Image (tube, rainbow, N blue to C red; front, side):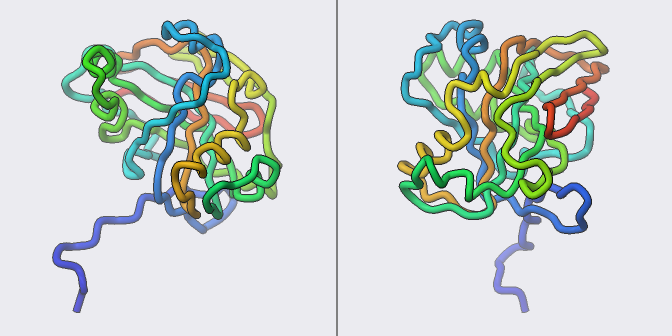
Length: 228
């Protein structure tokens, strides 16, 4: 007899390249404004102020290759990000050993209801209504560290219907992956199954139904997503 009062919800997972195993997702942390040019285009200052994070829900991750245009919005933007998946965690993790906790990396999109996010900002309210909606994080398969190491430079690009929208380089991150892990661990107890979306380069822009987004991170992989 089940110990649960209702049917247990499925565990959100990400496939692993060249493996039948799945990576179970516990939490999704997202860093805001982590590329200088994107910070400027969003009206911010790219100086190294302390980083800030928001969260998406684990079941926002979607591997279908389709992005259903969400309700209650007329201004939905793409944001290309490198996903960092943790195999272990802890608190107060030193920067020097932070990468020891990384399982692998993937290409991911942080789709954003920009109009609703903008309204929330004006009212000093949380961003979840603009960020954490259903299927708001189209994602590709994880590539383990054992295959690619820890990419810290390489082209980051996204095109829509063949036209380049976003371009940058991983080495343009204001806060690097080890620093993000160390900082988060000061405020949260990180654990295996946590993932971090590491920020987006400049060029974020709206999509409409029928658009096809092609995203690529050099050394990590590519992702094709159709807006439906």
